[in-house]
Image (tube, rainbow, N blue to C red; front, side):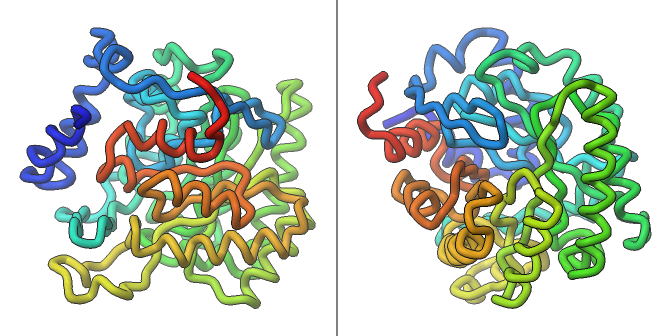
Length: 347
């Protein structure tokens, strides 16, 4: 029995957002005391090169857990091959009214309608300056970018461009989050003309910033699982046209298949965890075929055991990441997934 299996029942007695904040507040303290490295399982190396970056292993932490980059060093102790913080917006914002985070334990799922609550990109930059592992080999860090809730959708590109410029060269990659269901009209950016214009603006800025900094920083894009075949085909065409560096598939779903009868099952927001696993895997498979190997895929959605990570890789993902799985399974899931993806690798 691992330590998290003892702690989880206590954490699950607390309101989900309170438990989240309590955990995030104490992780840096545990890191400084050396307790995380002392008690967490050692994760084997399984190197993978994607987006021109050398990942120590292909299993990452998805965005949403550490929105402001407050616990990066502590989370690195978990053995993740990469960590994605955020989503961050140009200006601080409180997010949606509480309660806005709900557990569905019987389904190993979570529904959230957080609404990009964060302290803004300038605060994140300060936290990055105080983070030990940033820039060190083996510490791959990405930042998930969103738009402020009161930025008109036709001006959304400006918000992404502000964050891109401020973060360029300070992290390893950034992700355009155009698929959160919790910011009004955000998913409209997945449409043809809107997506085309956004990607053109981002790639033009990336080219200028690459010259300015003498360094190329990859830009990924995170999409929803609620896409039909025509949407996938059209989006894949644009990703190839604009040479997007990676695709993260997928975000949370608006569907409620299989959880409608559960307590909180019909709460508004995005559903994550086990119920989204098959849907996310189907989307990964469809994009893998449509992208013809030109754009790497980071698979996410419903990874709660090593076999789920293998399923994502088999569907065409190059890397995987999870967040809800960490809530239900704890840090041991990192090692389980890495070992499942490379059982011949020794400690």
